[in-house]
View 1: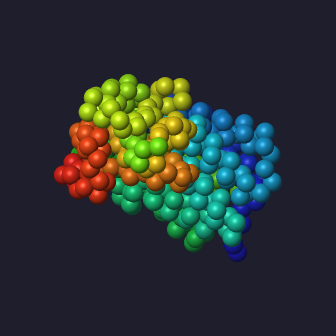
View 2: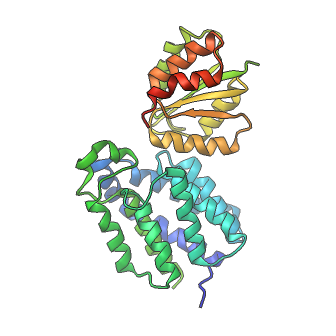
Length: 195
Length: 123
């Protein structure tokens, strides 16, 4: 059976994600304090609050439109690196959804967008270390909440090769990557919205 | 309109204002515009500020210098929307902006400037 994403699910997904981000923004900023610039929680909270508001105002009827609104809002409202990265992911998902609404291909397109924009690969201690394995788990219909937790925690022992944490060299080891943590929440709420 | 302009992008507006002041000394006739900080002037970069600085620059093509990685990501997004060609340099920010400004002022061609800046590539 192929899992197809519909627009109601996308709207519900974004609402749940905004709640999760808002609830955990201090935790995300603390993770970012350890190895980055300490603003990931607030940046994502500002961005997602605006996403939910804009989706309500514009009331899009297709996932292509919804993903595009999410992308443009994150691009303009999130100041740090997560703006262009999440923004590009949703923009690529919007483009891919014109062909096919299958969940695994959409997330795969998003992951490729992030890789292109940030120039990172697997193991660089970035959000891609959640997005890439999630894309392949979705293909095999085997993604679980526990696996998400595991993907996020695997970034702890990695040394950062991209982003602000990379300036710390070996001292970036021992901390969970904040982008991996917010991405874990993104996919946890996705699982809950499509249940 | 001049053929080439310079665009400076930083996470902090004072940084680009300062570099602009520095390089104007050697490049009085080169169009220079800047994008620093987020929309609220916090530390970060803003796609809209970058778009604006591209439009306002009188150069037909822009040589672009930036500080950290996320500035580059927003620059690459801006490049997709921009009608002007952007030449983004992954070089030491201040040294290469200064050098490019001085060379543009005396009419050195772009290919030669790119060659001159090669040893300054650090990111």
